[in-house]
Amino acid sequence: DTAVSQTPKYLVTQMGNDKSIKCEQNLGHDTMYWYKQDSKKFLKIMFSYNNKELIINETVPNRFSPKSPDKAHLNLHINSLELGDSAVYFCASSQEGQGAGSGNTIYFGEGSWLTVV
Amino acid sequence: GENVEQHPSTLSVQEGDSAVIKCTYSDSASNYFPWYKQELGKRPQLIIDIRSNVGEKKDQRIAVTLNKTAKHFSLHITETQPEDSAVYFCAAPINRDDKIIFGKGTRLHILP
Image 1 (cartoon, rainbow over the protein chains, first blue to last red):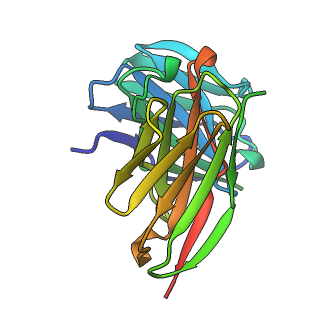
Image 2 (cartoon, rainbow over the protein chains, first blue to last red; image 1 turned 180 degrees about the vertical axis):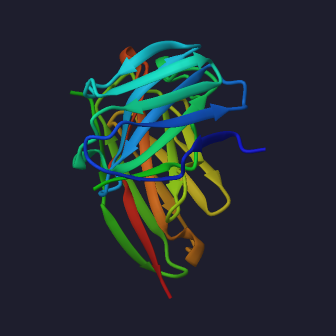
């Protein structure tokens, strides 16, 4: 009965490879996010989608391409992986977006630990 | 640009003592302030939040205070226990951008 689930949990890959992380939420939420957490534990938003529509793209390199086939899924594809991409990537969802201080709780997935070697 | 400053970055307190973590925000239109707790190797989870129409909110050993004039809010944990050891994140919305920004986190260590 996991609310936000993402796969894989661990991913070790070589520089230059292409990889994908999948995310699904069963909460019926309209908004989904990808966050990156680096080694210093900083949580930075990368993308947000509302009902399959891209809302936020936080100046993330073009090598990162999110795809939302429906509002319950938000996948992240990364091309030409670099050492600096090593991080924990969290998928998350909320009932609606964060506009006007809507106060929508963000529910995070368990994270995907990406290590680029 | 808009940001959320969080202090301290690391905090060690004796078990049973109180811990206070402070955040300041820059968007004067912000009106919702959540706190998330992230245990080692786990996901961040909401522990308490406050809206701008109140100055304080309490939930058992956890409380949050808000000073809108000074644009800062604080998390207070009383009678700390070992399970309180974690990284705590404050956050505030940037309303015109429809997003929420997290502080850089505070690593709280509860000492035996």
